[in-house]
Image (tube, rainbow, N blue to C red; front, side, top):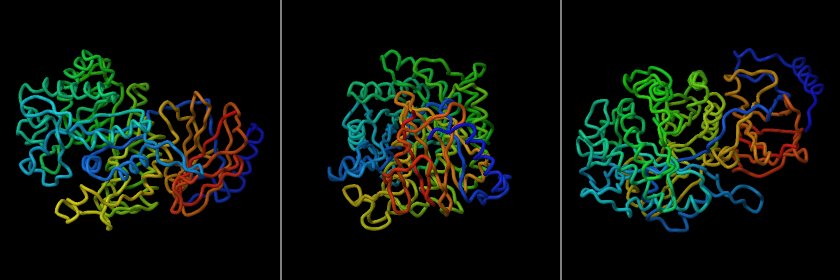
Length: 542
């Protein structure tokens, strides 16, 4: 697939002659015959850290109580890098796992005020100040299963201090902007987080990353789950206590923050004084809350893509704004998208309620991933939760007793599903796998695009793609998302140094209404991306 400049310009001329150039004002793709695209492996963008999901909160019961055969099958779907007999992946090979560090509402039971027992969590710390490492047993089982299957990174995250340290003795907030910590307890909370990290290090499953706050912009006054607000000053104060403790314990664990509830909180004002403009707050040297350069602090900001995806202009504009702000920092900090599921009402797939195992939600999320990676330059991307027992669009694998899942804590299946049930694969699982299984940690996104420029708005309803290379092996990975109802023909060339793909053929992996990362092959000069599908092409660069 070696493309010369003469061939490239000839192809561009023919395309200009046969179709009208996109003006950005039409959602119908004008190029019905085929797209000439380019991939330039010599121009590198962000280095990838990986793709992940969290164990909140369902794993606590499934990992402890469900039959071992089913647990292993689900772990294979999430973490396996093995192949089936036909060459299709056995699982999606997640490289990052978010392990939830609970605050102790489970031990409080109904006195926690959290009605839904699925949303309570145990705490390693006990009331007398000792530690019980047998807690969170189900979560620990899945963490061990992930490591056995080659998981690269573990991220420990907390959303509330232990209930023994909070102002109200609960895992939700009594009100206000500040972190729910009793006076003088900041050091104790930091010691707790460092001790938990040290324990897992000693167990041979170290936390590569530690996230001490989560969505600090929300007030968390409702006892729907564990959670605490925090001001930028609170967060900086906690990091200043936590950083030396990790260092003194000889841990390599890196602190990451702030898990902003919406992306806009990272780069500007968004209606939450003291809890916004967090990139400047934590990584501008002139800020009173600056924590850059401290031991065990990673130069990265984390944000959640919630409430920014229901319409295409917002989806694109927010990520362009975030990308521009990141560029003003010159690459440090980087950016991770650390949590997302469907919360908004959308024209495409409806709202969050109503689970969808089909291709609709899978394509919707694949589009979000694409723009997070290409416009905001996300180095890591994580889905919210791996398992869901709800009739809701929040899981990769769904649990039920032969129906569409439960709709609340009082559903008759709420208790029985803690012990056993059916598990269902979703197309979303496999579409995430189009990215996670092939774009591995250490790979680099490379320059790519349409030779005849297309607006992001036009791409969002038609064909999107991005490209990645492995600097060590020379592997090239190209991920296409075809949102349209029409098959797309693609002609691929290169800009900069011409390159070829070994054997002039790609291995292809397709997720569609009828396929789950189905293995195939595709000639490099005859690429077809089927309608309503996500397709990953993998080849070796010569």
